[in-house]
Each structure stands twice: as structure tokens, then as C-alpha cells.
Length: 384
Image 1 (tube, rainbow, N blue to C red):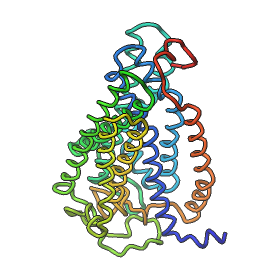
Image 2 (cartoon, rainbow, N blue to C red; image 1 turned 30 degrees about the vertical axis):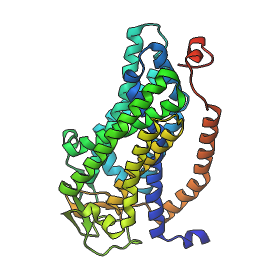
Image 3 (tube, one colour; image 1 turned 120 degrees about the vertical axis):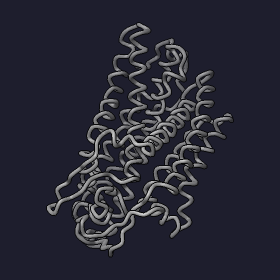
Image 4 (cartoon, helix red, strand yellow; image 1 turned 135 degrees about the horizontal axis):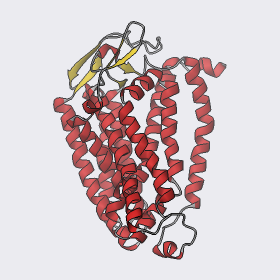
């Protein structure tokens, strides 16, 4: 109880904003290379044995990695109820498509090698491609729409009304963000294959990783210029009460060009964050052309951290702007759960998140090493 009283409501909201970012980055950094490998599968592997090698690099770990997505969804539900309500209802069809694609993954892993038929296995390989490409694209498209503002509003009773459609989500800027997500995760997936494969597969992974890193840099920088020139941001013009009630309507907001760059103007050191997104991808490109094994993967994670954090820092304190009624935009100060709820969740997180990290580290230690052609051809314990 003493600790509860010592941690201000304002601090708890800020902590949970950071934790939400940690969970989203954790998902992209961990399950992201699974999605990237699945996206590359039909193109990087030329034979059935090579495709089995690629599948076996992620087969034992993808389920554990996907826990980060579940944790992020749970955190949004418990810590930011209005954010959960608006995003999961407004993006319902898009999320359903992403969920359907993700469901294809376990089915494809399970049934791909059940029948020794090229047609059968090729069909499941493309299912795995869908399971990697579609979620990566949709998650990026969602971020692109959030940066532009989402068409929702509240009435006087805080009932939510979303007035957009699935086709509205597929606008040019959002699709660009979707492509950044795809290339970023494909770069990360190629880096994972550098670490886990040998011979020709490793060589191809290095070449594709280099290409995806270059494309990621170009698209990321292009998106930055687009935001600078053409994407209006949101700015709060009324007094902010950090420890006030969670009512999004207790503020006024204006939409103006350049608002998403205001935090960087106020705190120039923040430019290091988008710089990390570019430098990490450059690191992938450089290390992929050496004999380095784990460095491309590490640099890919640095790039992912920089790119995703750039969005969060640009929007702070907004977490879901409203293009329909800017005053209804959700911020970290007016859309969170209660003080007690955030505190109890923080206690649970402090206890269980380290356990998850320790278990994950142990799993990767046990599964450390490359998947070789001889392992697949001899059937030495590989499941796929």
C-alpha cells in the first residue's frame, strides 16, 4: 500500500506507455523474424529440402515468440480500455484478416510434411507466406492510419462511433507504412537465416538481407519526408492534467502541419531514435557482407527498435488520434485504466515478465545452432 501511494498516477501512465512500446517492439523483434522468414520462404529456398531447413529454423520457436503479441493485446485491454475498444472495433475486419493469416501458420507447420507431394507441400509453403506477409503488411498499415488519425468520435456518454471502412485503411501513406513493416521484418528474417543456415541458403539470406535493408532505409526515409511535408499532426492546446480523470473529451486539440515533429524540435536528442532505425539497417547491410553470424540479427533488432520507437516518440502523448473529432483523440493522460488497476498490473509485470525473459533465453540456448541439410535428410529429430 505504501508503494502504491508513492507511485503517482501520472508516473504509472507513463510507465505503461513505455511498457506498451516494449511489448510491441518485443513482438516485432522476436516474432518479427518468424514473419520475415515465412515471407521469404517461397523465394529464398529452391528445393523441398531447403524449404524444410528454413521451416525448421523457426518451427520450434514461433509459438513462444507469438506470446509477445498476446501480451501486447492484453496490455492494451487492461491498461488502455478506450484504445482497445476503438482499435479492435474500428480495425475489426483488418484484424480478422491478420488473425486468419496467423492461424494459417500452425496449420501449415502441422500438415506441410504429412504428404510427400510437391503440389501439396507447395500449397502449404504459400500458406506460410500468407501467414507471414499479410500480418506484417496489416500491422504496418494500422500504424500508417494511426499517424493520420482514425475516424472515430465519442458522444456525451463516451459511447464510441467509428465511421471508417476497410478500404479507407488502404490509403497510400498507410500502404507505404505497410511496406516498411514487410521489408523491415523480411530483413530481420534474412538475418535469422544467416544465423541458422549454412552454404547456399546462408549466402542467399545475406544477399536478400542486404537488399531488404536498403529498401527499408529508402522507404523509412521516404515516409519521414512524407510526414514532414504532407501528414498533419495533432497538438493539445488546452491545459494537460496528467493525474486527472480518464475522459478524452476534457481537452482541445488542433491538427496542424509539422506537429508530429514538435517533440524532436523540443528535444533534439530524440533524433537519435530514427537515426537508430537507419543505422541498424545499415548495420545489417554491412554485416551481411562479412562472415558475421549474429551481428546482422542484432543490428536488425536495433533497426526495429528505432523505427517503432520513432512512431511512439513522434506521437507522444497521443496514442490514437481522431481525424473525425480531434478533441476526442486518446492520449496517455486521459484514456488509461484506474490508478489501482495500473499499479496491480505493474506488480504482476515486474514478477512475470522476467520469468518470461528467462524462459525464452533458456529455450534459445537449448535450440542454439544451425539447421543443416544433413539433419533434414537423415531425419535427426527435426519435426517439419
